[in-house]
Every structure is written in C-alpha cells, then in structure tokens.
Image 1: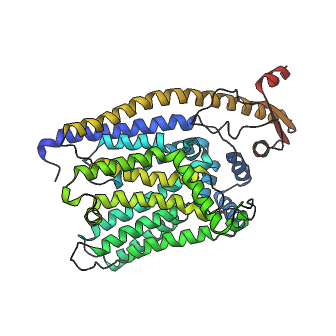
Image 2: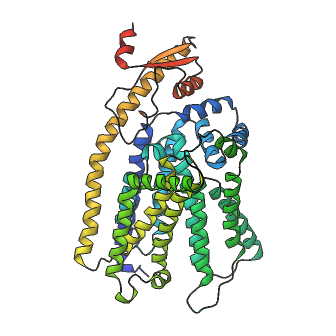
Image 3: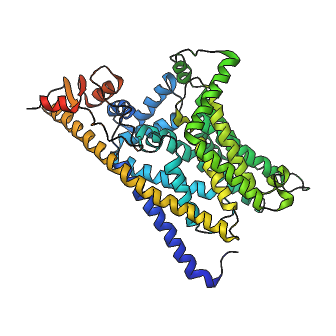
Length: 479
C-alpha cells in the first residue's frame, strides 16, 4: 500500500494541489470556450433547432438526419440539445468534458504515484498542443460534440471496461440480478460508445476486445478465465452501435454526393493510404516521434533480459497498455482508407489513443537516476512556460475575433428588430487576427450571399441574405 499514517498530511496536500490544477485547467479552457462564437454548421443546426419546441422534436429531427444524411446520431443529438439550451450550458459542459478527457487519459496510464500532478500536467499540455485542429475539435461547437464529446464517451467506456476487468479476477461473481443489470448497463454504454464516430468507435472496440483477450488468457500457465455476461454485453453493444451508425441510410446517401476519386481499385486504396500518411506526417509526426523515443528509452533502461522481447512486453500490463493504445491509434487513423473523403479532424480520436500510450510510457521511464528524473521535470517545466506564451498570444486574438463576430451579430439583430428581414450587410473580420484557437477565418462570410456560410447564418437569423464586405468598404457605407 502506498499509504501510511506518516504520509497523511503530505497526501492531503498533494490531493488539494491536484484538484487545484484541475480547476485551473477548467478555467483556462472555459475562457477559450466563452470567446468562441457560433461558426458555420453551428448556424445550420441552430436554425433547425430553432424550429423545435421540445426535446422530443430534437429526437425526431435526428431520426430524419439518420435517414437522409449522417449516422452519428449520439453526438449529433448532443449537439442539438446543446444548441437548444442557453449557450452558457454548452460552454460549461464542453470545458468539463475537456478536463474529463484528460482524467480518462490519466486513468488509463497505470503504475503512476497517487495524485501524479506532473503526469496530469503533461497530458493537459498534450491535449492543448497535440490535438489535431484544436479549434475544430475542441472549441467549435459542432466539432466539439462530434470529436471531443464522442471521444470522451468512447474512452470513458474503454476505461470503465478495463477497470472492471482488472478487478474481476479477484472479485466473486455477482448475484444473478446484479449480473443482469451489469450486463444491461455495459451493453447500453457500449451502444453509445459504438455509435459516436466511425473510426474512433472502431478503435475503442479493438481496445476492449484486446483487454478481454488478455483477461481470458490469464497468467502464463494458468487455465483460461471464464467470461461473465457483462464482458460479452459491453463489446456486443459497441459492435451494434458501430453497425447501426455505419449502415445508416443517410451515410449511404451522403456518399453518393461525393466527387468521384481519380483512381479506383487497388490504386485508389493506396492513394487513400498515402493521403492518411501525409496528414499524420504533417499533424502528428512530433507525437509519433515522442512515442518512439519514450519506447526506446523504456526498453534501454529496463531489464536486459526483457529488452525488445514481445513476450516479455505482453506479460507486463503497463507495456500492454502502451502498445495496445499505440496500435489502436494507428488502426483508428488508417481505417479511414475505407472512406473516400475525410478531414484531418477525423484523426482526433486516434491522437487521444496515442496520448494514452505516451502517458503510459512516460510513467514507465524510471526516475531512480537523477538525470532521467531531471529530464522529465525539465520537459514539463519548459512545456508550461511555452504554454503561458502560447495561451496569452492566442487568447488575445481569440478575443478580437469574438469582438468582431459579436459586432456583426448585433448589426443583424438590430436590423431584424427594426423589421428589416431582407439582405443585411456586415463587415468581414479584419486580417491579422488569425489564431490556432479559432476556425473563423476558414469559414468566413463572403460578399456572395449564396455562399454556404452566408446562407447558414441568414437562415439562423431569419433574413433573406447576408453580404459581408471588407471592413473599410462596410464602414464607408455607414451613416
């Protein structure tokens, strides 16, 4: 046991510091959330949500989308509900979800000391610096529900399943009644986790099946363990949710709108493989390199007789975690070869799995040697200092973007309040405020009222059209 009476005061103090860091992490991401306005698809979905007068109507809207456009019903239903409620609820929930995801990554990294603040700081920095298209997957409301929330649900199920497996060998079988409810609960949770995101849900299923395989195998030389109902119900629920999502009529109809690829057959498959590789090279090479570096460091500082031997690694639960999540990350990314067109943000879940593997390897780096201990702490300290400058500079621009978006929103609302529901002219964003924390410039309004972002915003506010002029031109037209 790690606890003894002499450590009580020290442990309590560390726990307070741990909770304090979680509070700071929440406030930092909350500030970024509060300065992120509606963008692009937020207006499209928001316009539809405005037509709904109740939560049941939101379910009916999502059912129609399942039949006509997209099968990600769980995360899109969460999006509709978040748009239905006052926006502050989403900002708070999204910030809490970000902190929860960091805790789930922390929980899956085994063998660390209690209240390991350094590990949690490192994980939080990974999410800030390493998340693919942070502005789209963490802060943009539509993207956050699809990727941040979806990945949190998936990793939440994987974490609970692995925790229950870890305790199952030492615990007696539950009573028939409790066993039934446990199986039902895991099946429903698995259904939600499998129905979130095509490739990330598939990666989550691989992780639970891998954990189940090693649980059943047991210790070397021991008989195989019996499976309990919930162990089968959980992955079965994941698989069912994944099948329901992938086979949705809407997903099939949406694929028909995609432009035909230049190559088909085996050549086309290799072309998709190359595109995925290039995306990973451009967006995730540093984190893949960090995984490789930590893996070699762990191997070289471990026992000589176990270095680079697969059997020895698989017998070590912590190494299985690192390798399993690393392989799940690769599978999650490269499973995208099955679809023709993807965005870089589709790799978000894969990167989260990779962050679990990196966190696990970071824990496994021994600290007995002063040089390694100093190196780990120095990396974390440098990361914190860099984050300070990163956060201050980018938050300043995020605030400027928010101010200008609020300004043109006020112009539109004033026109509507005055009874003018025709075409409304607003100013475009000033150049020079670009930041990795906002996707506003990529989905900016244009001078063409028929442009898709203009149309979405016009539908949301109930006007015939919106024309966005360069600020100088717009200001010249003001009385």
